Length: 76
Image (cartoon, rainbow, N blue to C red; front, side, top):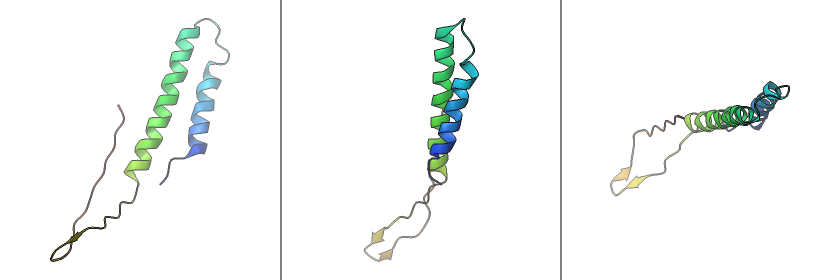
């Protein structure tokens, strides 16, 4: 599965909507919005990597190579 722009857009809009009426803590608001955007992007990247189809094209002198490749991503 690819990274979803619409899912990212929804999450980013939600981050701004959650802060739009708050006027007392501008720096805290910026920090919360930044964190929400970072989490949304990280989640989409991890999902994109963890659901990607990897098709190895490997060859050896005695024939094709068999097996599997597992790629796992995590955000912290």
